[in-house]
Image 1 (tube, rainbow, N blue to C red):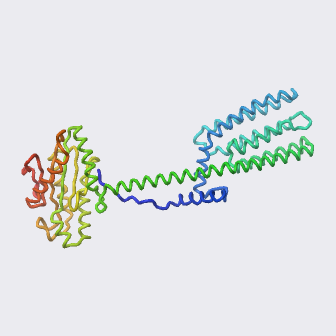
Image 2 (image 1 turned 120 degrees about the horizontal axis):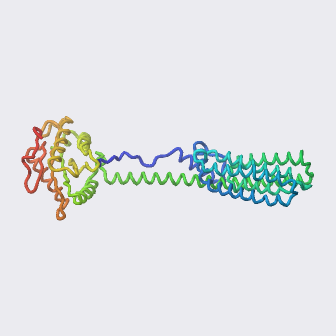
Image 3 (image 1 turned 90 degrees about the vertical axis):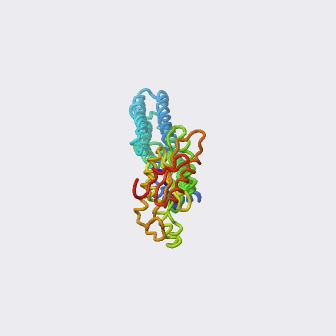
Length: 426
């Protein structure tokens, strides 16, 4: 049913978008003032971060797995007696854990736990290196130390661990290394200080890099949200303007332009399907008298009520109800023959009469009534859609000359007097 609803509001302030804009402004002023967004924005960003970095995480885990396994060649350079310890850590503990973490990323319903699982995988990997430091047979116990630095830098950058997870993991890893170096391996004090300083420096650099990368992602997230919101508002505004351009603001029915567009479409369809198309022109009887004596506000209320009564009869999806101009309305009924359209017109006439809107200045009745002209055609190639409008207009004119408050149909060059309806019969 082609009644037009224009009750669509234009762009209104959105609290969530105001929050996004404020957060973006804070980013533009030199970085995040807080490590987190206000809720619910932060939760949305968590999901965005997970989806945005998912592929990166998988590549990082796969790369880490390959490197961890390949570095087993280094173990061959050590004493054969310690090879079992190193390979047990690499291939029986760390590699299966990384594989499990990689498999976990493919579980969509558990994806919100990606960061904690990554933290656990990284902790197993770093503790594995600490274990190798413990089993290192060289006197300095420093053979696997570089691997620890490499893992720390990778955790902060390559693996896409969030800052809070990366820092807590780095602290746990550092404490484990310091405990083994001080209390078990009795590492030389000079080497221990140098190693500890390098670890702390690597953590600081990594944390700074991680913060910058998350900051960029937060900025992208905010821009994406603002752009999406602006696109939605633009679409709403476009729809609003389109509705306004094809609708009548007073009655909420289509306007004449909308009717003409629909007539073109349905006429072309009727030509293809060889189905009839019917048109009803309706006019409020003696409306000028009503408007002059009851006032323009009462006239507007009358037009709205009549429009509602007529629009209610555009029941099918292809039917079009529109305000044709002034106190005239139109019903376009594709697929209905003349008799069926005339019956719809009579239903409209009765519905308007049943409104019981007093009209003491009408010569047709004591209440507001309408006259209707009905025409129907099965379009041929040589026919013109304007012929249908003209035929309905002639029928409406005939209804007025017959005394109004009636339905008259038109067929060919003669009005169909046997099919002319009054309030007495259908």
